[in-house]
Amino acid sequence: MCGLIAVLQGATLAPLPTLRRALNALHHRGPDAGGEWQDEGVYLGHRRLAIIDLQTGQQPMHSADRRYVIVFNGEIYNFRELKQELAAAGARFVTKSDTEVILEGYRHWGPAVVEKLNGMFAFVIWDRLTQSAFAARDRLGIKPLSWAVKGDALIISSTLEPFVEFGVFDELDPVAIRDLMTFDYVPAPRSIRKTVRKLEPGCRFEWRPGGGEPTIESYWTPPAVDDAMEAPGEAELESLLERSVSRQLVSDVPIGVFLSGGIDSSLLVALMARHSDRPIKTYSVSFSGKEADESAVAAMVARQFGTEHSVLRAEEVDGTALQHLIGSLDEPFCDAALVPLYALSRLTRAHVKVTLSGDGGDEIFGGYEKYVRLAPNAAPTRVSGAVRWSLETLRWRPRGVGRLYERTLSGAESVRYAYARYGDFPVFRKDLSQLFSRDFREGASIDEFFEPWDRIGRTYGGHTDCDLLMRADLRTYLSENCLVKTDRASMLASLEVRVPFLDELLLDRIVPLHASQKIVGGQLKALLLPLAKRLLPPEVWNRPKHGFNVPVEVHLAGIWRGVVDDALRWGERHFGVFNYRYLRRLQRINLSEHAVGLELWNPVVLLTWAMAQAARRSAA
Image (cartoon, rainbow, N blue to C red; front, side):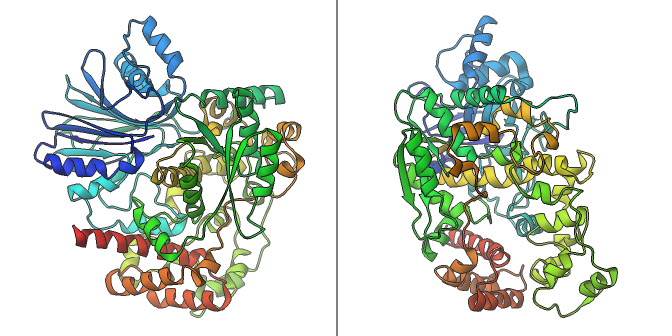
């Protein structure tokens, strides 16, 4: 894993010390080495976490003919096969790195190179002859890439931190704030900063000086249902999974695996064990609460496959540590599971530089109960229209009214209510109109709160069914939440995380299947279950699904109470986004009943992040 920046036609944008400060803002993404290249107003910078070709893989890297220069973040798992193909076509290679394969692939295939790459990647290539740039991001956005135009210059970076060094810390985007409150994250192409954009997953762009914004096109989206495709049998599926795992084990440094005790990570351990001549290293996190603690099941899997297992007790992150973690993010992110995942990443990094994760298994194979619960044949209980009208027009909203209101929804409305933390809902707690201050509401376009999700949904016809939910989740919840969470938590700890369930082998074979082939008779992950039953102990597959469940409401009233107090006090003085009378009411309820969690957490995260940003600007 690495971090990169590119400043194109930026001769007058910033002096070299500023460029280097911008690059070093990404030090945590690549602590092993730093490299830079300059030529006629072009600056490419790279921070390296060395995983493959430790001796000759330094970046920025030139192509063999010196025409192209690249900065690259990620891993290409099929680079050896591509290298052979390119060598047969006359390409010359001087390193053993996958970076050089991208360069020579671009020289040979042009922009179509991205369609041949199997892996996780974000990169920028500068063409010294035509004075143009080409950039791309992997299919599902495992690796990040952001950009902004300032004057005549184009600035590109892995994440948002370096933009501050170039004065791109203008006002926050009110629609992005709305999205953050609604989804827990800011969906691409927006970022929290008004003038910075994130390249969407599966996209590539080209840019020439004087051309304004880059020309962006999509080269991959999750495919629609292929009714002619049959589901793989157990033997074929096992082969696909094993191939995906084996080629993601390519590394010149030791590799471990996050072992939660669930089906996905346990299958990774079972398949990894077949390809290692020594015990694999597995890492689990234990929690004090029995409901969230899966460490005993993980230990059972570790014993079965003879792994070198470490149970890392999740330390209690106090208020100071939490403020530091939130303030370290390039933009605010509200999935509270980031906290234990960062703790696990930091502790794992003490042992290995690379680990595998089961991210993506639920979205690819149908592992969420919501896919069944929100399917068309699971119609909600109807409540009379008069009741709904009354709930929407009440000036005073009694406690518990949200549960009654939810029963009046059907179809797309029920999906919106289930997926949104906040929205255009005239009910207590989930109502953006109550959350935001009067002056802020208009710019936030509250009535369009679900547009980022709807935009994806419309590409699949907009009919709300299980297939739509699963495909939309790939481009929204998986790409924008799960993968961002994993990238930011692991990279803050300088740890590379690979995700075999999102290998192109599985994407191409499994995603086009109809949902009824993945969820059979209400059984989630029906394709994986026979394999799990054969390879794993019953304690793994014969129990309810768990996750990194953080008791937010308890912590906000306990060890994180000071974070809430600090955030609200600062916000009342400096941040006019919220209705603080409403937030104070939520805090009082939570202090007395531990009954308000994420509805209070999301605003507190934004305020804590904004407060840290303001402190940095003051200190600069």
